Image (cartoon, rainbow, N blue to C red; front, side, top):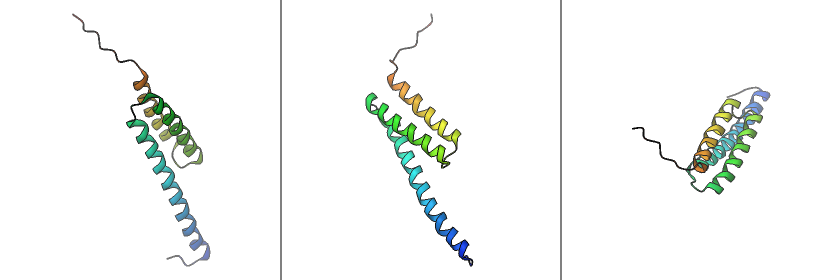
Length: 94
């Protein structure tokens, strides 16, 4: 246990920040899962926009690394593109 007043205060502020970060990352994971599991194109676009925006916000605040944010957004965009692209069969060569 801390003995100095400033160290005790630091413990309290760290706990508050840890809870806020945990909540934000949990929300991000929920949005990501929702976007990856939804098959409806229109709903997925809406969720993608919200998830991408939230990801950028967390990256700008330093809660996640900017490359992590870029990776997550890329995966979501790839999934969205897969939903919107028409299904075509590969051409068989004789």
